[in-house]
Every structure is written in structure tokens, then in C-alpha cells.
Image (tube, rainbow, N blue to C red; front, side, top):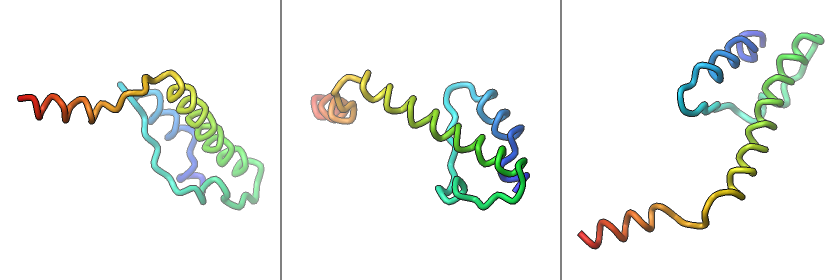
Length: 80
């Protein structure tokens, strides 16, 4: 469990990203059974990262223009 939920690994992955960080994980990892306080802290770090990403995504979606850029690209390609 310590390897999978390593705070250092998550910190390095997030802090060294140049443009975006994408964390791919099973939702079941957030429900991992913890036997020690240290394991609980490790799982909590991943839960916090997910909560933060969800909040950030919902904030950005409300600020985005209601335009589908794929439609714009298709229109430009058909005009050529």
C-alpha cells in the first residue's frame, strides 16, 4: 500500500508537470481498507487530490465558452 499511495510519488508527478497532470487510478483505490493511521493518511492524500481536481474541473467548466471546438475545426476543414 505504501508504494501505491506514496505521497512523494504523487507530489513529484504533480509538481514537475509542465502543462497538465493526469492521474489515472481505479476509484476502488479511494476505498482501500486501512489498517494503520499512516495508511489512512496515504489514502487521504489521494482522496484530497481527487476532491481538488473535481472542484477545479467544475470551476473551469462554468468559465468555458459554450463552443465546441471540434465543430469549428470541421467547419474550417469543409471550407477549404
